[in-house]
Length: 319
Ligand code: F6P
Image (cartoon, rainbow, N blue to C red; front, side, top):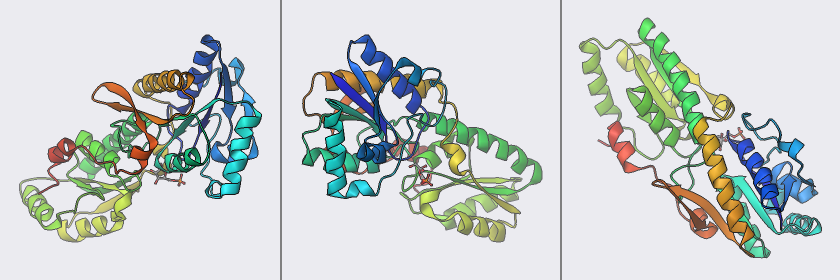
């Protein structure tokens, strides 16, 4: 069989490990691997090529995605989706693996309803915001990057008796903020999913300051749009000099962690095995409580990811 792989939407560390495993594994199984360059844009324009080993040599440890990615406006147009489907047919491709996030899976949901596709999605986003899976490829590396940044900020915050407000990515999801706040011992975590209880936090922190607290670390999810507001409040009510750090796109890049590499392999092998025995798959590989499964794209896109309540409870931001 001829199978293709592509990236779509925001890149995440581990995509290259998945692409490499895809090519190596298909050759090992005596099948034909194809690469779609530039995501859905490349699919529309037919930037598809049969993979050779040299296309994926030396890429395992690199962040980003060597076959690149895109967010395609044109793909919302049915005529371009037809063009994309015809390109797959032109190359005799029997199945497609899509490394993508929520937006990409919505696009694939529409695409798979219109055409008799055979595709499997691999949840890939640092935001970790896809329904049906507790882990998305790339989030482990992003969390390690954020942890490293917060540890460094802690050093200077505690030395200078300052408050720091650190904004992390995640789109509308607070997962990165929650796990990072837990791991760094931040005093404050503000996420879109939970109303921030400012009066209770103020009372708690003022009491702690009266008993010797000299610094404050606040992790704020970008989706709240409250970074500046939290900083102004800290400066005015705690009387503490306050600085803002927006971590931005450094959270997306970098060499994938060992865990993300391993999970890239696990996801990819399952995606390929599934496609090789299907004719019209429209599923996504998911990972929960130590086990892998397949979930219909319908379920994935029609439900909302929720942060594990256990993690929220550990943060004490629900009072
Ligand atoms: O979805 C991944 C992500 O990095 C989000 O966390 C962030 O909101 C967005 O992409 C940034 O998008 P762009 O790279 O287009 O600025």
